[in-house]
Image 1 (cartoon, rainbow, N blue to C red):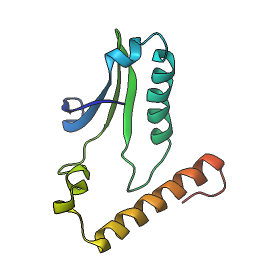
Image 2 (image 1 turned 135 degrees about the vertical axis):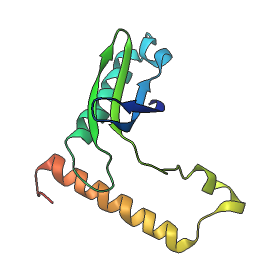
Image 3 (image 1 turned 90 degrees about the horizontal axis):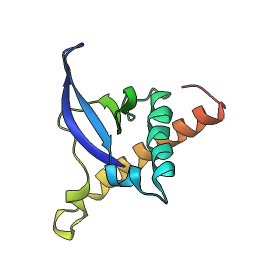
Image 4 (image 1 turned 180 degrees about the vertical axis):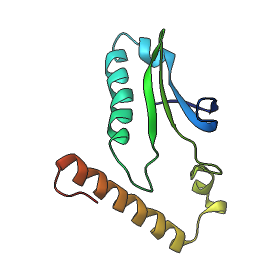
Length: 119
């Protein structure tokens, strides 16, 4: 959905992650409006949730023609991309742990959306 930069918030003196929407996607005549809605829907949805596996959203907005989301920066955070190659696969126990955490987090998010329970 965008490019994420490490940034610094001078008001609270901490590092933050700054996600900027892809300019080409925003200006696409066929899908630009939908892309913008999805981009800000991410900020709105995540911003309403409090869970250890969901990052905090501090702000979202538009500056000139740039759409952005300011969010919690996780020191040492990494993607799983490097573990998709056969020679670098994670142990099955770690994979099961990640899947469990993701499923638990999705369950929490859906329950909040439906209003069926608060954790």
